[in-house]
Length: 295
Ligand SMILES: CC(C)(COP(=O)(O)OP(=O)(O)OC[C@H]1O[C@@H](n2cnc3c(N)ncnc32)[C@H](O)[C@@H]1OP(=O)(O)O)[C@@H](O)C(=O)NCCC(=O)NCCS
Image 1 (spheres, rainbow, N blue to C red):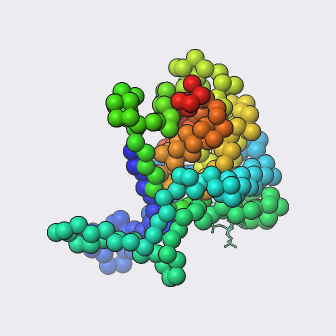
Image 2: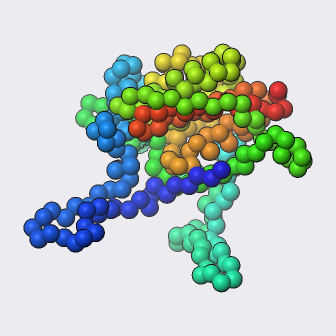
Image 3: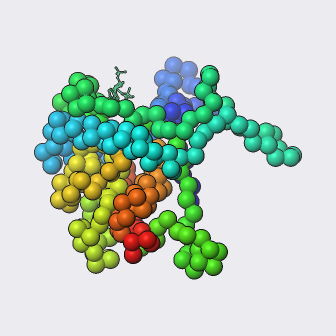
């Protein structure tokens, strides 16, 4: 299973001009990423969906900045302790050659020869975050308390227990169950709450049976709304930092969350963990995994 995303290389696209430019008609270019972050059904973008949740759950700017500051602090602490390095394959300048094909490769910029750590986490006190301008006047979301726009890829092997056993492979985690739900698109960020509820219902587990939660921090108010809706013990949530600090490379996030969760369950010796994300357009998805060592 592989997901990859380059948000910094998203093109500025011209959608309407394949058949040429009509004299006098406006020449339109759109930011492809901003287009991807817009919901055409609700007519709003992802930041606005979080603002809707902030209003619905009475979440203040101070709460969101504190949550973001904690996410940065947890990510920096986990980086410093070497936790994140355990799941990162360094990107280096290299060439990929195969006979009969044009060589391709990666060329890092300037004097950089290796990127082996996430570049967005930095200590971010709440009062510093509090000075950033909100994306929307009077809103709670800023560039500092929303998920960072980053480049990343994530991969893992998912196989049957029988195959792993037959080939002498020791699994990081067992996938126990999954759930996906639909929610109104204008509050898409609440998706993890009903998805986690459905997952618990399907498995007969209680919220208190779950040792760790990795809930994607698409936007600070969004994750706080999910925590409030579920009555979540936040000391179990994103304990190594979340997407506000690490980034949310859209297509890679699901695998990244689940790998981080599996490794965190191993580190802490806990049995069950849930990874979950909201999905622009109005969905929530959740996955229950089990640490085989603690089963
Ligand atoms: C919120 C968002 C619109 C901000 O975009 P942006 O304006 O390009 O953000 P920037 O990275 O330029 O950050 C804005 C400012 O905050 C500052 N900032 C960001 N993080 C900071 C931190 N941790 N500490 C201090 N300052 C910080 C930046 O330096 C920048 O300052 P400047 O304006 O003086 O240069 C964008 O990050 C976003 O949309 N994120 C969420 C994506 C999303 O919704 N994904 C989920 C899809 S479901």
